[in-house]
Image (cartoon, rainbow, N blue to C red; front, side, top):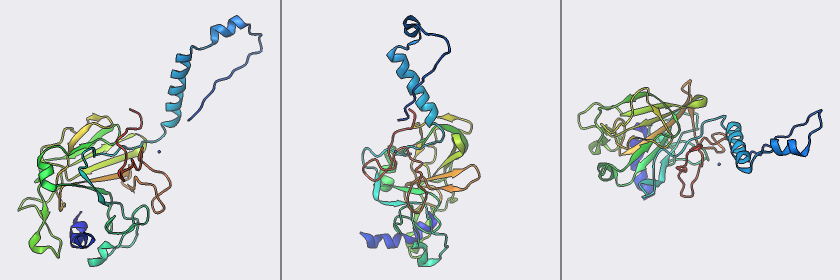
Length: 267
């Protein structure tokens, strides 16, 4: 987010049937009565098919949107995604980037390793206590950090340099890290101080409230930095696209408004 804050002056110029059928044979003759005994009731057959379908599909973790946008809380215009441009730039070059579909700044910025979702209304909306963060999938909390100042902002006296000010407080983000099945990890940064609803070792379910959106750490305004990694720490862009990968890690990459869907894969 630090690099983003340096680029904010530029912003001002932009005003997802598996069908399984069991069939069997026998060397012995089967009578109609035997077939009646072996035939499943329709409801049992449907339940077994659903179970087999789920077992067949669950080979990966898919994610729901970690926020709720029913009231339009989050910016649709500015979503800063993972940068897929391998080059590292300085100064004004920090605006040179490529997101999953080939868009450039302000849809990403240089070396950005997650997706930033900006809270509309800034601190005013944050103070209402309505901007909750949700677990993107079932998992176990492996790390948290809380207790840090959550009203960090751009140092307006040094706007050109893009400095972040936490008003004299240590610049550290409140965060939650969750490990999921199939080697996926999600990270949630810049949370409101004291808003964390989980602790290390807690088991969480997809869609469970875990904290609130804030502006702690290297943050120019209230937003959620959502980061996906594998167990080795390699960043994964959850969005599928020409410049990321063919596979999407979202249950629904676009729910119709430009944001991922809020439905869990296996509710």
